[in-house]
Image 1 (cartoon, rainbow, N blue to C red):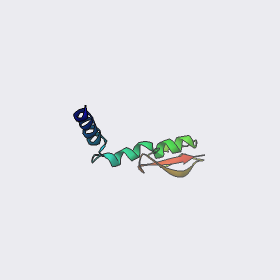
Image 2 (image 1 turned 60 degrees about the vertical axis):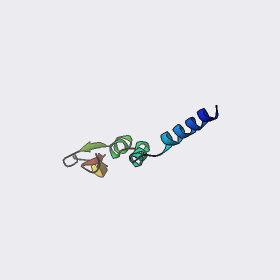
Image 3 (image 1 turned 90 degrees about the vertical axis):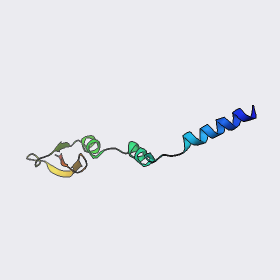
Image 4 (image 1 turned 120 degrees about the horizontal axis):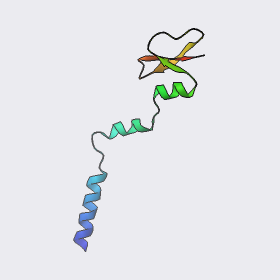
Length: 69
């Protein structure tokens, strides 16, 4: 029984150890800039913003503009 507990503890320690990709898991909780733009009521455009709109941010990791009326 004691050997089984030691084996279980060793397995848990191995599985709980953060791997090299653990830093990428932080990005899961963050919202993309595209999501934030659409949530504010804007639209994303790769070219210039349409008439009667203004640039309020970026979309797609800075590759496009967030345009809002």
